[in-house]
Image (cartoon, rainbow, N blue to C red; front, side, top):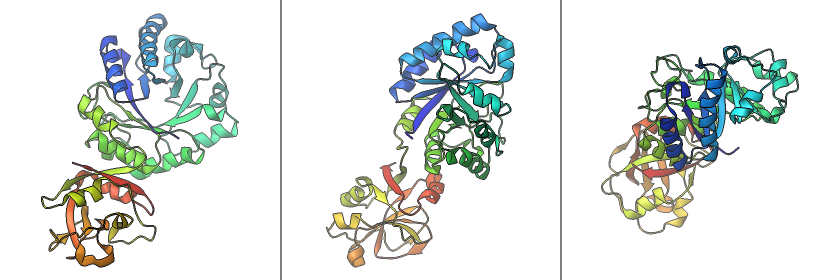
Length: 361
């Protein structure tokens, strides 16, 4: 599935002009979907319809897919029924996210709604919820999954649990989504907002690294900023991510040659299939560069995350690129740069044959 970036809007905690400006800005940076919360509505059906319809109409004009986050109390508040989703269709929404689930048969039935609204399921529970729905033969192409976000510090998902929950949806071939958090956004659904990530380990990381991680897992198709409004710098950083390949930021050593920089930056690398514990080896590049590579920064101990290239002392391995995984020394290799400390954990995802790139820090 194609991977996408998304953002969140909270019309009950913002105004149309501010949301409109954010829609314009995120559209410029190629965002494609909007998570729009309806969990806080209290103004009655007519006012709610006017407010949400106006925002959704503008978002659709800008090419966004809009999914509304709803819960059972919303149906009571608006005096509508799960058996008739015409209200959400009239608003212009593309789908509804069920923050709270039913008995399986209900989800199956509403997946056949005549408006072809996508039914997005809560992914953040490691139970047989999806399996139960599937036993009732739902309209599977109109099912997708989306994790929760967690406004309170320390309450978001641990990584292993996130993986277990997500794999249930990936196994069934459903589109998946999860949240990252802006480090400047202050708007969310509740009065507590310590950030709005799905994973606790992401709460204080830059947004781009959060997104790189979610895409690297292979478990998430849509990465959504949970809180509003992200800064333009954050949006720009997210727009520059390659959602299909890990791209490491590298800080070059002062003595790194222009050819060494070209080896690093101008090639799509992949890890050899016959892996080693000591380093990630990108071997094809040595066939492309045949100029003599003189030694520099080679009489040192290399640390995890250092990027090294074979010098002329390395014979046939000259110009091979390696990422150090275990500390070692070897005068036949030049240290040309180092991966950012915050991105070192992404090395765990460079598995056999995995493709990766570099960008200058």
